[in-house]
Structures are given as structure tokens and as C-alpha cells.
Image (cartoon, rainbow, N blue to C red; front, side, top):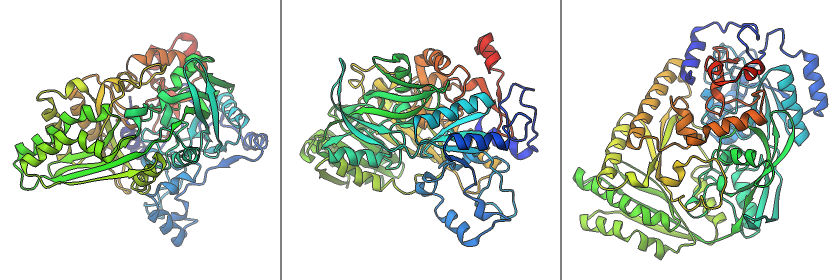
Length: 581
């Protein structure tokens, strides 16, 4: 698989030579004879009721001939604010995914080119199922690249693409409480449009004295890629992943057909959508999820410095926390924490339906160990009357800076890998990783019981995992292709170090290394073969594409961003599929 950074580097050193679309069995690209004419686009816009947007790069005010000093400075100042990208139809928050040789970089010299780079050529502002259907059919008939975009939160580059037509689901914002009844679940549920943001869904649920599983980022959508990728939460140890709670999807498949998928209808598609990765099988219009009665939530924090401690004592203190972790997560808690040579920090311990006193009791063995060492630690427990108020508190810390471009990966550490001396091995490997410039976070989970009476495609490693560790390598706004190549290689090397701690354990595909050489196994586990069969059924022309999406190896981006049939596809696709590609 060609890495993103190698792709950018090739672009940097090439002239972006255009080839005929059929010479290598490629998608049609701007400038090709097969690219839709202006009249084709005008007709599509008319069909869509004027909802077709021609992309004007967000960084255009920073370049000639339309340079505007005030507007440019405003874009630069707000670049790392997610709202800057959220309200555009094209700009991803991990901006390097759009950084091709002609991309309109607001931090580049004003005289440099302001082309579209990796941005979509056109975007459909979807308001209905018919809008999405028309877009899928047009892309398929015209043989052009197709992209699904909602908020722009995307670490793996699925929501942007050069020379593409995109659907923008951001304005599908309906919310409705429904009474659900089938043989698997009877109770309240919330049906939400694909564009509903996390904070909107949580607020709506709270108004009805309910809760829904959500990410911590307030502007991360729930109904689309978050749930389709699995979707972990501060509530997951008690309520499961978002994919575990999905009841039904409304979608447009790769043939442009409207479908409803649940455990009774189109069951295979429902199974694939629930954890098998976003951008692979269909455009999600809405998702209906379980909604539980709201509960009070305790937020806990605890931190201490390594200063004054012998290294062995400091490592032993972290080990003591890891010994306490199984009981903590079994009680429904989810700690988000970090540690390094400098110290230890539980930034947010969520404890649904537990009082501060109960959380304190669960932590007692760990606290006793710290007391015996004479560690001076800061501890605080804050009770919240419901999940909505808790969410406001933790999401405020994540509401800014989420758009910072980072490169990294994640890995699952199973429960059976945290016994005996193995906790120390994780700690020492994490020190080495951080010594090389990476930031690292850890999340404790118990999802072993959340898999009961669910039928979904989440990686089996979720059920065995005790810790999900995520690392990030910050990138600068002015990092060029060569710098990104070095960062990319470093990320893959660091990820391999974590993988050696627990081979084949798996990774959270939405927060993984996009250049993982064994991504099919590590992202999807034993489900990959079945997922590919389902993709072939509902997306026979491979309209939906992502570098690490199911079937992603059947296509490969060239140096100018065009998609062409990859060499791998000649070995994995059937003869009829190769004719279709």
C-alpha cells in the first residue's frame, strides 16, 4: 500500500502528469476527455435543486490573485479550531490529507499555486435521500471518484479526495425519540440524521431524560463514521460501543438505492455498517441508536509528579494503577490517562451511576500504594446529575485544538497481557515511544459483556482489550512533503513497537496508523473476508473508497490524486469485478 507521505512526496517531485482515464483503468479526472462537461454539472445542479457546490479552497484569501490580508490572517488564526473546517463543505481537519502539489495552503507564500489539491471538485449539500442517490448515480455513471463527508473529523483521509464528487451530510440534522420493539431490544431509541453533532445528540437526549453513547469531542458526529468504525465513549465500559447500540440505518448504497438495514432487514449490511468501517458500503442518512435512562456520572481526576521518586518506585506506582484497572472498568468506569517519565495523570475518569465515594473505594488499592510511597498526589471527584452535564464538562477541554494535524496510531492491550511483569513492559515501551517525540494517551475499557446479544462487525479485539493506547506525532502547518514522509515512517515504526507487546490484538480503525502494512488484519480481524463480500454486494462498482476502507487495496491514488486500479486488485478481484473496475 502506498503511504500518504510517499504519495505527497511523489506529488512534490512530479509535474502531476495527466494520463487518459482508461489507460490504466482509472477514474475520470479533471482535464480528461471523459470528465463531465460544464453542461453535465449544470444539469446535475438543476436536478439537485441548486445544491451542488463548486469548491473554492478555504485558503484562497491567502493567495494571488485574490489575496486579502485580513481574511487570510483570520483563516490562519482559526486553522486549528474545528469550527473552521466544520462549516466548510470540503476542508478536512487533518489538513495534510488535502495537501497535494497544487493545494491552496493558507500558510504558503501568497504567490504559490491555489489549486484544489486533494479537495473535492464538487460537493452535493445533501438534504434528502434523493440528493445522495443522484450523487452516487452520477459518480458511477461518469466514472469519477466519490467521497462521503460530514464534519471533517477524519484521521484516515476518507472524507476528501482529488478530482472527486462529494456528498456533504452535515445538514441532515433531524432528531427524534422513538419507541423501539423487536426481539432483541425493547425500549427508547433516538433516530438521528447523519449530520447531528455529538453535543446536539447528547443535549437532545438529556432533554428527554435519556443518554446516548457519544465521543468526547462535541463536534464529532455520531450517526456516520464514528458508529461505523465502532465508536468508543466515556460510557463504553457500562453501555458498550456506539456500534453495539445501533438499531437501524437508512442508507444509499453503491447502486444509488435507498435501503433500510437492521437485524431483520438487510441484515448483512446492518452487520457490516456496525463496526466495519465508514465510507465502504453506503452513504448513511440516519442511524437509530439505543437510548437508556439518564444516570448521574462522577468525574474523577488524579495526578502526581515523578519528581522525588526513584524510577523503580515511579514505575511501580503506575503498575499499581494497572492492577486496579480491571476492577475499575468492570464497575463501568472509563479512565482516560497519560503517563511519561515526568509523571502520571488521570485526566478524566468517567463513572456512570457511581458516587464519588464508590469511585474512591474502587481506587483504594492504588491510593494505598501511593500513600505507602509517600506520593503527593492531587485527587478530585465531581458528581454530575446526568451524562449531559458531565459531557459539557469534559467536552469543553476538547472543543478547541481538535483540528490540529496529527499523525499516529493506536493498539489494543488485552487483559491477559497486563498480568505479572507485562505491565512494566508496556510502561517501558511507552517511555521509549515518548522519548522519540510522540504524545500518548491510554483508555481503560471493559467491553467483554457489551458483546452480548449484538450482531456486528467490530474487531474481536475490543472484547478482550483492557487498554486502548493512542499515540500522536504533531505536525506543523508548514510541514512539507519530505517532513511528512519522515513523520509517516516514524509513526509506523512506533506503531510496530506497540504491536509487539500484543501481536494480533488489533487497533481502533478510526485512530490507527494509515500506513499499517497489515491493516486488513489489524483493523478488521477475522471479519475482513465477509466484509469484502458484503461490499461487493452493495457496492459492486466500488463507488466508495478509502485507503484503509474495505476493498481499499483495489484502488491506488496516483501522484496527481487520480484513482486507478491497483496491482493488488488483479489478484483479489474476480474477472467480472476487474471488468467493472
